[in-house]
Amino acid sequence: MPDPARMELSLTVNGERRTVSVAPMARLLDVLREALGLTGTKEGCGEGECGACAVILDGELVNSCLVVAAQARGAAVTTVEGLLADGEPGALQRAFVAHGAAQCGICTPGMLVAARCFLDGGAPATGEAVREAIAGNLCRCTGYVKIVEAIQDAAGMEGGAGGGAAVPEGRALAASGGAGSGGGSGGGDGLGPPAAGRP
Image: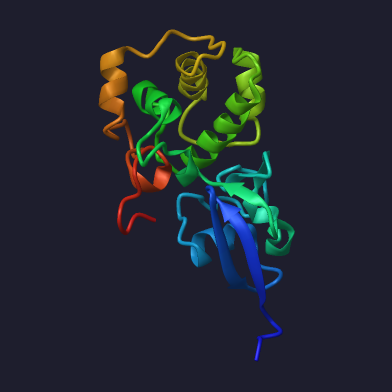
């Protein structure tokens, strides 16, 4: 007999159709982390203020801590894990590593998702536009300059109108291995393939 306290939720996550049993008022954040094991999406403030839990929902950037699971029924969700190309970091992740734009790693997944949403929109990656795109994402480790430069360089590498200098090839290749500065390397921060046991 079906549990009246739970509902079947079907949605497409990172291109894959998934169906899970959840409480109707569960947050999308909890569905992703606990029901689907996608722990790249972080919980920071839990109030929609920090952007650590940002995902792309039907093409729009949202804070998953504010989205009730039932609202995501039938939706397409992209998490930081979905930004990998064939399991490898793309230009955006490589630029973050090359510029040292990842520090402790808590804000990095949300920053990457916000940046991906911005770059997919095709707008020129001016400093002002990039800062506006990540305005909902808080970083307590740095002054955002390296993050903005990384997004601009990623735009240039992807053929967009980036505003910074290109990432040197050697640094970009080294970055693809996931070796970054600070705590932002590998797995749960979205800069490399998922690491087993990474929170």
